[in-house]
Amino acid sequence: MTEQIKILLNGAAGKMGRAMAAGILGEADMQLVGAVDRSCIGCDIGELSGGVAIGVKVSDDLAASVKRCGADVMLDFTTPEAVMRNIRTALSAGLPCVVGTTGLTAADLEEAEALALANDAPLFVAPNFALTAVLMMRFAAEAAKYFPHYEIIEIHNDRKMDAPSGTALYTAQMIGREREPFAQGALNSFETLPGCRGGDYQGARIHSVRLPGVVAIQEVLFGGPGQMLSIRQDSTNRDCFFPGVALALRRIRSLHGLVQGLEKLL
Ligand code: NAP
Image (cartoon, rainbow, N blue to C red):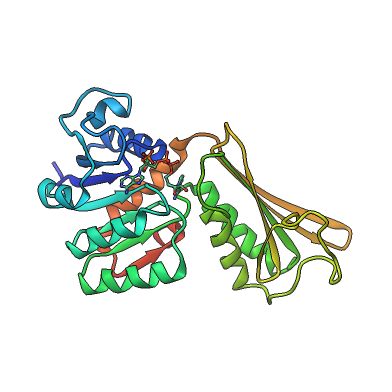
């Protein structure tokens, strides 16, 4: 039997944490050795994820769990406020990290990359682990070469903390490599209700919708004389994220420093 990848799951009691725990527990080459969250302390992660007890209880102490559970990798799906602290704790202890939590700033990533290199512990970060989302971003970057006028509409559940979504920002950054910055829309336009034109990324506009009942939807709209192109991706449930997460967990030990984006592993 091949050696199992030992995983410490942070944010284990959250929506993504539970879905990822269920996925990990279904893989023969993976073992869930630790679970951390600030909710559901003492609950068994096997039961929390909808299965049977596996004897791994949720702890609220990441540093102690890193020391105790002998993990090969930390998987983080927590919150934008908590994620940098978690990354610092894991990387400082030499523990590689796969991070799906969004909201990391450029300064955060710079600090995290330095930590990853100094501790010889790789860090993989992806704003979206769904393959259709990766394709949507790639197709959007391609379309922007021919249609530089674009706007993004992203829709997420109403408990999401950060806006725009990590996926929307990452899409705008990818498009930014193909498009010169310019203000989208009429030059002298104005808002009678502040915020109506959305967030401004190099002159392109991003609109964040927050509604109950949604997992994740993003549409990138391109306009040209007499034509429009719409590239849309829907995540209808959280199962779509696990194959990408599993790929990152299997590949993390072969990476060096900071690697960003699932497309780098495909
Ligand atoms: P969620 O349901 O709110 O889960 C987050 C969990 O982290 C909660 O249980 C929360 O506890 C816990 N938490 C908060 N602070 C913590 C800390 N310091 N240490 C440990 N646990 C802590 O959110 P979610 O929907 O699972 O999403 C989690 C993150 O993943 C978000 O940033 C989201 O944008 C991102 N996401 C990424 C992808 C991707 O493909 N990369 C896909 C979906 C979501 P409390 O409930 O007590 O606050």
